[in-house]
Image (cartoon, rainbow, N blue to C red):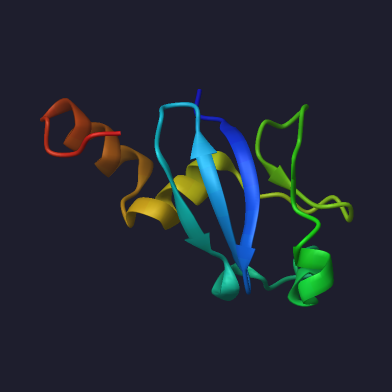
Amino acid sequence: MLEITEVKYDSGFTLRLSFSDGATGTVDLTDSLWGPVFEPLKDPEMFKKAFLSPVLHTVAWPNDADFAPEYLRERLTGMSSVQLLVAEEEGKYGA
């Protein structure tokens, strides 16, 4: 099961993430902050409060907003979880 292992605020609405499969990178969530639970994160000071949830094993915020690790990985790679698995099996993409 994919998990986030480290979260660091980068700048703007971006986070530097490490994943349980060894992948790391910066994810821009600017266009993902819509809907009732994510609207408060448009406040830069609130967004900066991102933390690693010890229960959910992903990025979370004090207002109970969180993103699935699979979604974050998709944002990092530009590939869906299924596409990524197929590419890794074919040796076309390394974690």
